[in-house]
Image 1 (cartoon, one colour):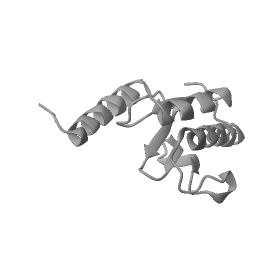
Image 2 (cartoon, rainbow, N blue to C red):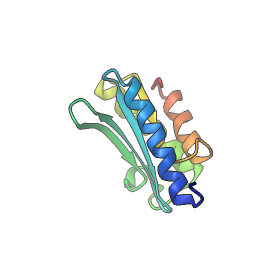
Image 3 (tube, rainbow, N blue to C red):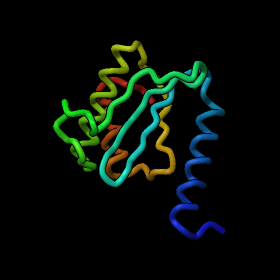
Length: 119
């Protein structure tokens, strides 16, 4: 039985990815990565193996370099929604990886939805 945090994280990540792959039908995947200092998100076309758009707190234009909080996640979510619209993507799947849908991840998803992405 998986008892430590890392094993539980990996187990959740595999469960989420397998569900997304089963329902994909060629739609893009909005993949989120959160570290202790930054948060980044990519819009990925798995059929062609191409990143369509990306946003991260490492970009200086957002003014949140090195921050990993709810405010930064909201800015990143709004930015990825805007960049996805420019790329012509309106529907995607939200791939939270092994992260719980709470706090920063939820703030990012809500901001992306408000920006016009459907998932």
